[in-house]
Image (cartoon, rainbow, N blue to C red):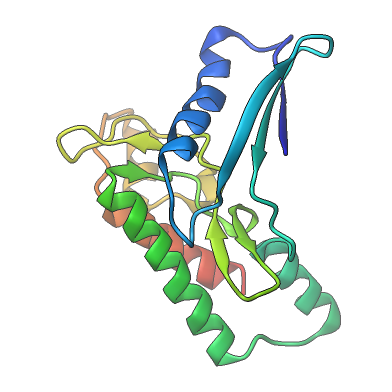
Length: 174
């Protein structure tokens, strides 16, 4: 369950959470974390999003665990993960949704070996094939995003952005 405190947030800051609920509720794919329900807890002023439980953590925690143990993932495991990430991204793109914050901590694992892309709070539904504005985790941003920040230009994101992020996740989280 994802819990978001509403007390200190502006309406503009609440929008990503509501966006995540709308997007999650509309999706159904084996490699996308499933949406179950959402509710506002009035006493604590929190928005609660109940999602499918990833019973084996996320890729980032597995990588950190392997680093601590000084062990490696097998090539088959890595290919299995990459294929599942691409299938999840393809499903999002086929629904005109761009994740925009794909990173190891947002890629969840199930004990049965299934991998699921999650945390769609900053996702964008593309209109006419383009999505506007930059958000997400800057360290994982494509060069075009950095160019936008440096030039203060308004660049458009294409579906290639998520593939770039996938390569960064694979390179820097290994």
